[in-house]
Length: 289
Picture (cartoon, rainbow, N blue to C red):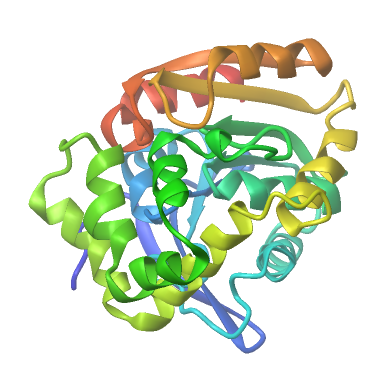
């Protein structure tokens, strides 16, 4: 389907070897901000945010492999594969530039990995509904996923996401609180007509739900926590109310544990403030980055 974007926002499919990344871009500034979405949305969620910031920053909103318009490929759901793909793109396109990374939901896991590998390039990280510590209990994944997991075994969970398209048909309307119009819902639904995309999302959700301390998600976060001890690296924690995966106690604990941390609000929303509160979200990025 043909997607409509705000003025100044361009859609681009770029090649990295035999892999491809889809992104939205806006702006021509030397200040680079890279956005990575959560599940089950896509770079489309950032369209109004990057349009508002385009006069001050060069903004790039990436699609995770298998999401949006980024094609899925074998093992594209592997955290280290996704991190390496984005790292190579950043090193290729911005070899001598500092960048700001913005992570939402599952995208925060990828940001953690990028911070660890590109710590000399990243001067600011922004998390919204992100995972700031290794996940130890299912309740930390947010109530909808916690409730879902508690009722299902592994085989049923795979069937629900791959065969029944649960993440789009059931989960997205829940976290959107019924506020997405039919056109926007169709934009998010369209990529998941491909089974490969649903398989990729199933594996990414499985990554998130693996509570083993040696699992990829946990090791990615733990590696980044060492980098966050740097005073020169700014950490911005954005929250909305009521929120899903982040609460104020968790954010305040992180601020108490690491230097140069600020906390700010992006209004009322469950999980999709960039979709519903784009003006405020962009104002907070302009203020803190």
